[in-house]
Length: 358
Image 1 (tube, helix red, strand yellow):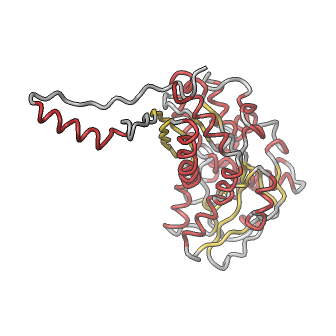
Image 2 (cartoon, rainbow, N blue to C red; image 1 turned 45 degrees about the vertical axis):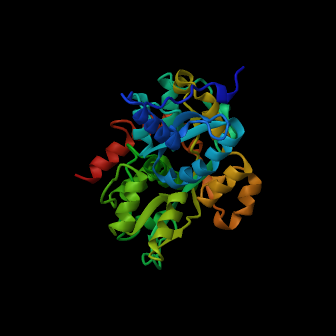
Image 3 (cartoon, rainbow, N blue to C red; image 1 turned 90 degrees about the vertical axis):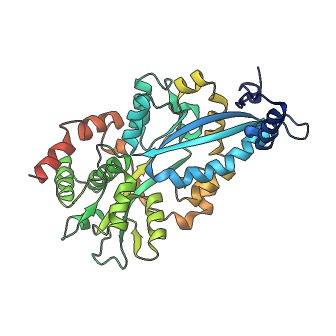
């Protein structure tokens, strides 16, 4: 089997033919200086070039930027391959649809299982794709927390507080955003986990969404609405996004951890159809496996995603306050059932939101 460095053709630089020898030599000299990124230097063969695309969701922009900066030189040293990693970020559901519609993602690092599994249903991922990487393809997890104004003027401490007084709530749309879906399910599940019924959970989320003045399409849009536009009293946010939001606010915002919330499981996957067609499986798999290394787990923790390596998590325990986490399986058979029951056209969210806006 050829090595990864041998699998990719040398990048060819275009040089325009010239009529005179002097001009040809000048062009050649400039080309050698620029190298087109790929010429040999000091007798050493140049690195081959390959590019992969990571299609992800809104709150991971900063995480992947740091992962890329650490991984690319490491991969170059180990394989001789000059790797370029491109990023795409938007609402998780929108990203899944973009890949299905033809966006050639080598790697999909979406927010929720149903968005990633939608790629399998379209033949883009192999069956049992979750078994491709350690820990069910989960290098990190997260949860939903509250971001409030400085001093927490509304005294928000738990889920029932969100509907007990005159409070404006910011959360993205569960129709397009993974953060939006998780916030909806966290609110619903908080009732069930406290011994409530499905009827009581429906009543609670109905009253909650009556307090939502605007539904942005993605997590980063909701952050902008709350932190920069100053709309709302509380923002339902993924933990990593909440930390970034608070840090950038320079003291204007703070995080409140409710006693319980939902476990967020953002799986990672290699898009099999793309990597097999483009010959990029080796770098794509190495890229995701890097997340499980000690260096990768440290980067994950630094960006306030919860590392799945227990030793790394314990090392950063102070940054990740313990709270009771329930899963979607505590009130639904799984993501397929939840998607159909809560977020499909005409399902629970459409029913309660349309009723609340009439």
